[in-house]
Image (cartoon, rainbow, N blue to C red):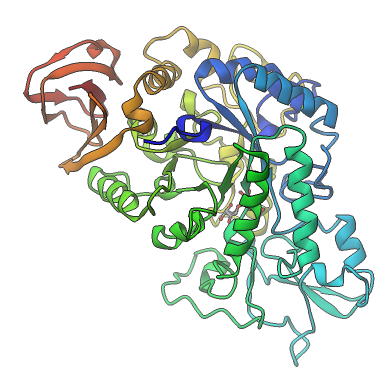
Length: 524
Ligand code: TEU
Ligand code: CA
């Protein structure tokens, strides 16, 4: 196999900066705090950190409403502190990825303030302005993913502007080449400062239908679902013109060599594959979000692995994700025991894994009281299951300390103390120990990094597959059930199990027992 790139060999660790480590007692995580925890991330065995937005922002959507693409919000720190963090990370052998948010800016960005100032402002066409419909209402039926119409009336210029998310997040017009040039300059600003790549926010939404046609009704819509599910996104997502933009972003990163382009793309696998680019000149890693809300069964996951691997274009590199800052945490979705199975799955499947901060200690969704809710997705559609605060609660470092060591101040979200890094650190049976063992195993077995995956089989509640590279062959078995199961295996030696007592166990050819919620990796 051709020499792998760092992002093919490595493991990415997502840091939600607001919740990782506060260093100045304001209850909000910051860059100095992250910098102080880089040794922890490196010792865990990760190879790169992806930091969610840290740019100047009014924080209407907690940083995904950017008011200056080329600076650091004072709440998180400063550009020199960021540059220091990059130097420190690189010294530790960690790559640094930023979150690029090109689909929309903040309504407080100077670009939008110019654009909204008058109909003939040179930047008017940098955003999507439209006359009202004949009845004076919104131009069409497009809905915001945060609830309500996606059109906001601007009295001053007598037009509406489009926002896929909050009114504070006006969508940029990516059909305008001045926008593309400006955003290319943003990428180069950070690449010049040593950034090793980007996770691109809502890459699949960048282009909207140029005729602004109404989206069709969603026939599968069920009452009680979020409002925007009423419509199919036919004219507001996955438009064919987006791929030339992806190619352009990739070309810019390739100018710098060895940088990674990750796309946040919530699409079915068949549509997702286009984002690798027809000639492999698209995104390096269109995020594979299938595990985020998959039915947690051996049969479902087996089918998912086979279908995804079969759908991958030649030379396309797979990736897997168990969680992120927008979805309920894996340990809350499947429970503590199955979260251990999920860890083995994530770190033994073929392709690059992304670990969401806190999942390595089995963090669960935080309990957020009504008066503690911060997420506009919840505030605008309360009780609809859209809120993301629970998966964004602060990292739990040491539960004997105030706020688990996250902050000396009042944390921006409540900190759970049901577990922490410190107490798991020395416990060989802890989730943290399991993640560390898995990452050591992964790093020491080429079969897990660049091997093939074969014989993906679900037998009852047990999923098995093999990873092979040259003379190395690993057999992975995961019990998704609540009963002990017998698994057919070749002879070998257990090199890792979720219940540590089996490490080193010799496995005779035939059937071996797998306890409920147990997973093993055997060298066969
Ligand atoms: O998310 C895009 C997105 O559509 C999913 O996050 C999810 O469907 C939705 O946000 C749930 O409310 C990206 C960011 O990850 C998210 O945090 C931002 O809120 C959003 O884009 C707007 O930038
Ligand atoms: Ca702080």
